Length: 172
Image 1: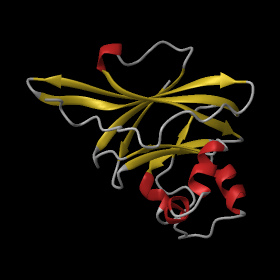
Image 2: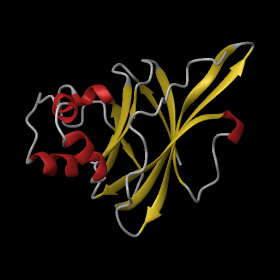
Image 3: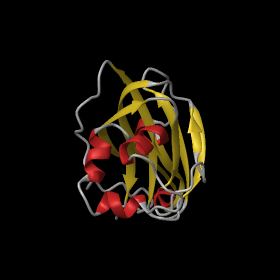
């Protein structure tokens, strides 16, 4: 289990294997806009289907707590606080896994604002859960829990890139 704090400045968070991403593109030049390439071609979906990246998209810019854990480990977030879930994202970790604000894809700089995750090389089914706690009519705690389930091979991508992952909006 890991607890990470991420400041989101570009409406998303991304978990990715930097070595696999570099291999996919045949090398990545310093300053290259990966985001533009991923969103203006089929490369975006290919990178996700090949288990290179797991995005959390369309979220408010804010300061988020992110918990990561193996599915077999005890739950960190109380079930009643989970307000959104998206699964399954395929993931293959070849050497290392990092998490960062999506803005790192706007101007590639190896290691810039990356936080390393303690996830061993292998195949995983990944589930992203958003949580929110409301006290006195205001959001008092929020973030994401990312669950990793061991897999013998690269799982099928069944998550939705269109899923509303907003956790800061209070339902009426």
